[in-house]
Length: 130
Image 1 (cartoon, rainbow, N blue to C red):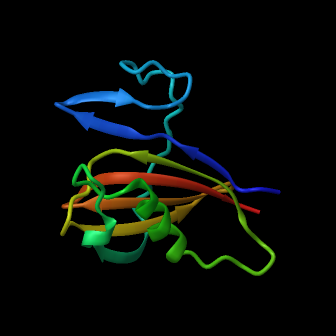
Image 2: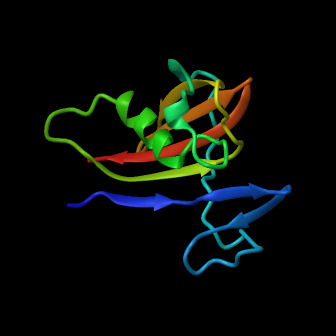
């Protein structure tokens, strides 16, 4: 099996949300599958991470690939298991020097990571382990 990436890239430009996904309207993000999950109160704290210069893209935000690195580096994958997909919803920009408080929880099918910056949800990621 191969790793399948299900990225949705959101770019905030002058307070206008534009979706950059193949086949999606550039001015309407209603056709993009969003994660619909209730975040439990008893989620597990994983770590705090302060963004560094190497995390930042040319727009001054944390690069999307760095979110994936952060999540994978916090995950203990059992021998013989692997992730078959990852879906990340970017909810709020993360800037240089911001501290991300990362939390984890599971349901029957997925592992979720939620990142908070200044007590506000910055992103939520859904992963499937097989």
